[in-house]
Every structure is written in structure tokens, then in C-alpha cells.
Length: 304
Image (cartoon, rainbow, N blue to C red):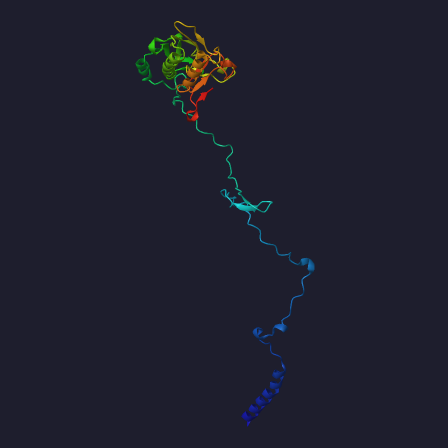
């Protein structure tokens, strides 16, 4: 009886509590709360807004990290078009490499390196040693003399020529290189043949106006050195004969045998000498034949 009353009381109490529990709200889990029900924070004031986003700049070296110098880089050539729109031109820019300060000096020249003596025109090119034997076979008389040296003038192995073939003399004797002496000797044989044909007599002596002499061309001190300065030229003033009057260059009258003789030997000299000047060439050569062996490019000869 008592137990039944207790059970009834419990049931009545449970029934009364059920409606109250149904009416009390129960907080839902956060994961199930709708987004629209989540409260938003108040808006941020305008003066507190973050500044506009900027492009990130290149990383600058910090005070603790020393800057590293990069080697010079040659930029590729850039083609540009000229103002006329035609031919493009190519320009290239290059970043110069850093130069140490101060620049290093070159190493000093060792003191034990010898320096040879400077060459001079008188000793730089020796003459042909076989030339003297050729002169002897031709019948000329010549003897070697000491080397000539006077500043830029001179000759390494000059000869003193005293007689031409067939006993023809030189007045005075000529001091020449063997090359010039051989040309004079060979030409003299042609002169004898032409004289016998034109005049009936061969000359017995050649009148020499000059051979070796250290001077400028045409005796001008400011001019280029003459070939006489190298014993490479000779001036022939005239010819002496036995039994007839001598012939002086530049004094013969046109149309005479003497004039024909002078013209013929002058033309023949161009076959033996590289330079032939005489009357009509210029005022400096109006009274003699200048003959020399000056070398020119491609074997060019000057015959006037």
C-alpha cells in the first residue's frame, strides 16, 4: 500500500517536470549554428585601415649581411632602327667591372736583359761579295775601301773604281757600292760602242762630277737624302777623246753627231740604272747625267 503510494508520487512528479523541460531552450552545438546567426564585429574606422598594397621591393641587404658584388655582366646587343627606318644598327652596353684602386703596376724590366746596338744604314745591309770578282772579269779596276758612316749616310762595303774596261779611265775615281759600280762598268762598254758608231772614236776618259757625298737631293739640305749619300749614285759630266774635242753633257747642238751620241748613251743608261736624269729633267741636272740604283716598288725605274 505504502509502495504504491510512493510510485504514484514519483509518476506525478515526473509528469509535472516534463512540460517544464520541454519549454527550457537547450543551446545547440556551435557546429550546427547557422552562419547568419553568428554576430559580426563592428566596422573598422576609416583612419585605421591598412595602406594600399604595394609591390614587394627587392630585398635589400641588412646591416648584418654584407652586400655581395656581382661580376660584370655583358648585356645582349640591342638592335635599333635608324631614323630613316632602314638599316638597323646594333648597340651593346656593358657594365664595367670594378677596378681596384690603385691599379697594379706592371712588373719591372729585369736589369740583366741586354739591348743590341742600333743598326745604321752604313752597316745594316752588306754588299754582294761576289760582285768584285765580276768586275774583275769585266776588265774594270776597283778596290775595297773602309766602310763609310756619317750619320744617316754611308755604305757597308764601298769600292773605289779607278778604271773601266778597255783601259778607259775615271777622272776622278768614283767611290760606289759594288752594285752601282757594276752598272757603271757595263754601261761604259755600251758607251764605247755607240761612240765608235756615231763619232768614229771611243772615249778614253769619263769625267766624273761626284759619287759618294752625304747631302740632300739637288744639294738641298732640307730635302730627302740623295743616293749619293749611300755611294749608290754617280754624276757623269762628259767624255774625253784622243784626237778630238771632249764632249760636255748638255752642250751639244741638236742635229749634230755629238747630240745623237749624247741622246743614245742616255737612253741606253736606262737599261743599267734605276734612275737616269739629265738635261731637260730639271735645272739641277742641266749639265750632267745623274745615274743611280735607287730601289723602287715593283722594280719601277725613273728615266727622264
